Length: 278
Image (cartoon, rainbow, N blue to C red; front, side, top):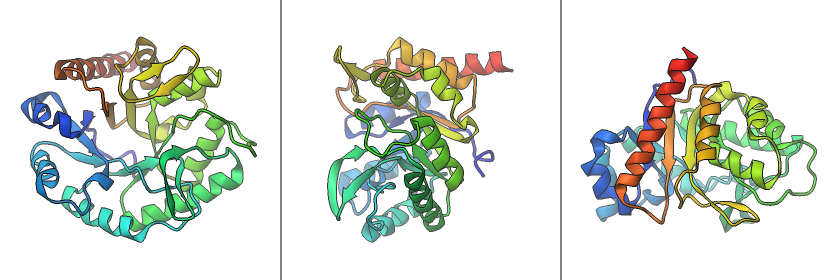
């Protein structure tokens, strides 16, 4: 199913602050990503923007609140309303993060990492299978950034991600900036990490900027992409051919030309790497 998915190119997240520029420069952007939670049960200008961009772009949902690694049952209100939204946008796939964000029905406003062990991997994989049964479209899981290791770790990060992907038989949304951030914060080789993953399952890629505090690197989505992340992105493209690549920028927006320049750079790297691979 993953191999038969169409190629979408280089996209951008739909943000209120970027909407007018996205429409104005729509010939330079291939597709848009949305957080479905921001559009379900909404009307007015918010929903009008979504309906309008749908005239020009494929729209692909990337969730925030599934809590795929949690122990609470999936929220039926969320599930039913995301299903209604999908009838409108007709997405090729759906994704969320390899984390949890609910505990005892209490929402934690963050993406909490999971312990890397086999029981957790099986638990997550079983929940992914349920999501795929519910939505009947491919589901992708994203590797998150994390800043501490939890107790009861019996696997490394790459083996844990691989175990989840293989048990669930799902797709992979690989965030290359998160790989770089985690490799720097936790002192491992980012390229070797890529080589430890089942990259044939990569469907979508996120690339973004981060904040380097000098002591720790924080995944912010509010900075420009740095050279080392572009270089790691090149290494990834030598190893796989994603169907869609997203420039993530969520706040601290620069002049729109800077975002277009980043999209141009991503597209250029993608084309040149493909040519060398051929």
